[in-house]
Image (cartoon, rainbow, N blue to C red; front, side, top):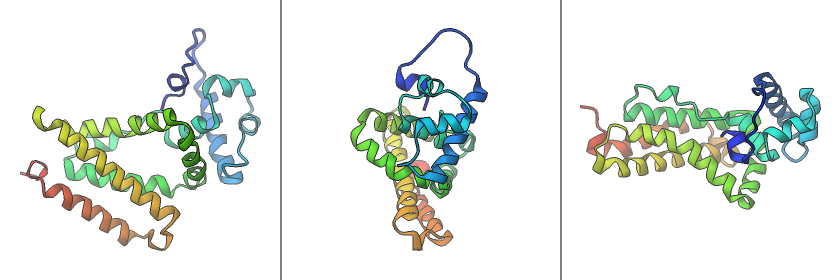
Length: 202
């Protein structure tokens, strides 16, 4: 997610100091793990990062937006998908989802973010579009024009299943948050796409 574009705050002038962003985002992650979502504040982040509160307000419009940027980055990392076939794409979606929800700062943020999304439809929609759209386009890139829409739908469903399973295991079914269960989820997702001829390896 791009904090400037999502908040509509575009300013001319000197280039933004990326080191400030790095300090603020690092401080946000640290305080999430130390204090949790409820006690995390923009003022506290500013103090930890050694910047003014106004510096944060100019970059992020809300605590939720700041937290999302700190745990997910500005844009999805597509490098792991480079050169992969559909099976490789599925494996990385499954692995990446597990790695994401295993991070302590993400676990600390999830309850507050879910509550925020019920009240902020724009932020929820932007998150899903930003982090599902580009991988889905890569998944469908090799499809014919007629099959492209169906491939995008498959990709979005696969992302939802992999991420949803990892979230559920990390928060609710923690006894089953194991290598064997995650491997079985990956196998089931791979089996699902193998049933469609166009995804099978030649």
